[in-house]
Image (tube, rainbow over all chains, first blue to last red; front, side, top):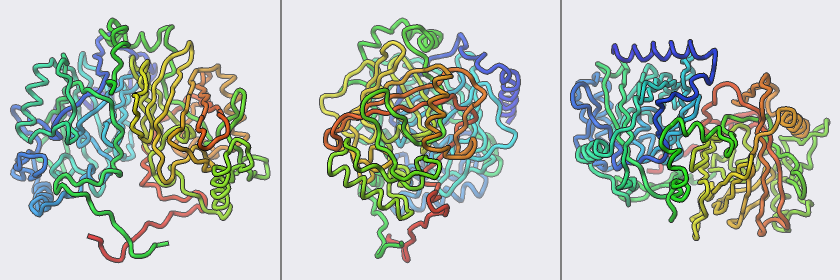
Length: 293
Length: 302
């Protein structure tokens, strides 16, 4: 809790001092280079080594999603929502998610992406996910508006702290399919996410990726997982903290670790993919008996 | 298949790659023009090219002589159109004359590719060593342009196509082929069709404020401002007197057009915060000024 509040204060303070001279923080000498495409072979969040962590998968596989409803971060209503989602998995179908319903991916759910791109400019960071072209924009050295209109990406402001990009996000819209993770964990519009993005060495990245794949199963390249550059010398690690008093008993943390990806980036349009990876069949598309108008 | 990043270029730029400060130098250095930023305009209309055949015009004009954005009846007699394309433009125009919008990629929330996507009012252009990324505001479309690369021998068609780019002096030149053709794919605001042979070459450069503003004003005179003031999610910093961005593009599709044609699009610096606009959430029919009906089944399908 304390940490999160510190970040908010810092973002606000930086915004206030730098807004008068936009572009003055155009290039910090220590700005790390996050360029290129980053991939991984898991859609799950890595739990922290200690402290409150994300809901994990009791199913231990990407294709069997049973969120651990006993995680102490969950308030009763949140745990109930996870149990409800797990029921669908028991029945052998996917419960609706932003991914399979082609609805916008919100932070931190968007970090389930198998491939991302981080574009750094003097006044803005742009994060795109390769699946369905989701785009997030982070205003650098700015403050959140006093009144934020909720949007799917939320209002994100960022700044560099040495080699780390810190992003503070509020104002994330909540819709029918919205969730925090792959297990139906809910959030409210009181959600506050702080992400810390930095480069790590290749060995650290490899170990983190392998730990994540061991916990939740590996998504092979043929199934849409990224093709990782074996000669890569670095990784991209995103550690984030989630705070939402409506659904969580405490702020909690998680991470995702990407490595440089190989290959041409393919255009993936969500609505064009009818495949249900849970059942292995194509999803039926609603059909009307007669036209409505 | 080529890698997303160009190996030869990466070799040339290995020194630049070593630090982010160098990256900034890349963006501002004399060899590469700085085109980065958020750029906007207030119409969906295309401007005449520098020379040669231009885009087809709207036969329906307002009393002030402007293109009537609520009745898109393309000039199907334009010699640029092959007979089948002319018939298609005429057919779409007949629908438009009834007061109903014909289906297009924007109102059907379908993926947009070039040249159609070049109509969009607000873009963010981002330059990196080996790639240029262009974001389009409506529906968050993303185009990725590999720099100093080549098209694959066999391009797998995609909605945005395969785009490669290079700098020629002060100009970014983008060459795109391999655009997929779907049920609502079209190459302009009037429903001119396109085939998978479509080839588009775009040239982006910054121009002086006076030239940009003159082109911007002329375009608004021809098409009318889509909103009466800053609005529609598009914001322009009208107090800014710096450079504008101008795109000039050439469209070549021998299955549809009798010759290549070109057009310009001129942007001023955008202001405000980029709006999140999710197409499927907007059910407004701007023709009728009503919300469109959503299909509803009497019983669930499954």
